[in-house]
Amino acid sequence: MVTETLTKSKIDFRQIDKTEPEWLYNTRKNAWEFYQDAPMPSRVIHLWKYTRPEWFLHQNIEEQMAILPIISEIKDSEMAPLKPQFAAFGCNRGDIVSYTQLGHELKGSGVIFKDLPTAVRDYGDLVQSYLGRLVGFDFGKFEALNMALWNSGLFLYIPPNMSIEGPIYMHRQPNTNYNIPRLLIIAGENSRATIIDEYGGRGNGFNANGAVEIFAEPSSHLHYINPQNLSSSVRSYLTQRAEASRGAEIYSIFASLGSDVSKNNLGTILAGRGAQSRMLGILFGNGKQHFDHHTMHHHKAGDSHSVIDFKVVLKDKALSAYTGLIKIEENTTNCEAYQENRNLLLNKGARAETIPELEILNDQVSCSHGATVGPIDPEMIFYLKSRGISSEDAVRVVVGGFIEPLLNQVPENMRQMMRNLVDFKLVGKYAS
Image 1 (cartoon, rainbow, N blue to C red):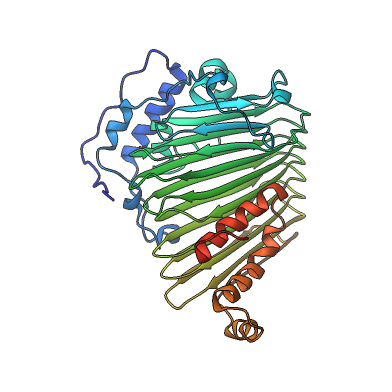
Image 2 (cartoon, rainbow, N blue to C red; image 1 turned 120 degrees about the horizontal axis):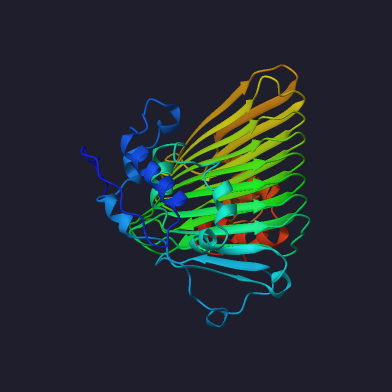
């Protein structure tokens, strides 16, 4: 993997494209300037203690400015039929072409599901009012790079009072030299939906820099599921932020299984009274995989509730660094927040670091956190082997028992797929 040494002299941003609205161009240009001026994240800061920022840079990044997003011209007749279990399908292909398709029941319903450049062209005012509000160019150096140079992406708008039964499935295949995808989701008031945002692909030796923004308007209910099963030679950086308005519920599920090096900054802002967020994480690392996750629940409104349950399984020489922050503002009373990170090490070479954090600025709250790191219990393995179970299957049973309570909280139509992914990481074959 080739990494970049920062260029000392500044590089001018490209000229505006004839198809590009001025507001978007100015945002991108400001982001490029911020990116060039911003220093690299300091390794002294604990969020970067275990991961080198240089891993997510690339040579000649300025050449990416010439790669503009492509407005999809793929027709419905050219796509494979939509699978019946999905309400809609969107794809970010490896060649940065993105396209979407709606199921019959959603056509004419008011749902907008487009590749992001088409959404900018056709729904510019709506996109402009949300894009960058949660992950703006001043969020950080890598986030500025994403805003300046995103070259593929999807946009989803769910109108108020709409309940979508089947999941909306998004498949991302970042396998170009430096793929920079972006996703913007707006769930209207009192709407309900499940979104599966899967990152996969077999490309080798590339970097990916992604950004996801999710807005849950009042009383909406949103499931967001993000499985990551990228090639073992990929370096992936992802920033995700969600905002839950008054009475909204966001249920986020993250599964980190692939990549060589992966750094995820995941967070939900509880911005309205009565907002709720539940964030679940499953991580399974093997070989020399390196995972670095930061989760955050920021309570900005009273009577809000959050839960984080993040489980990690490591074997071989894999490493996981996890930092979880609960932040509750000074005048934000009657909040409940819980955070748990459990790490299971299958052999001596694996390593897990866990740093729980609480930033509580008032005393009218209920908060707790827990973190454990430990090896697999040899007595459990001995007991199972004494009952005629092989060593391989005994480990499989223990790991299954460790993650099954969390998997049981995953929507049923995703549960077996995630079990299969974990089984494949564990023993190199799918569950029977």
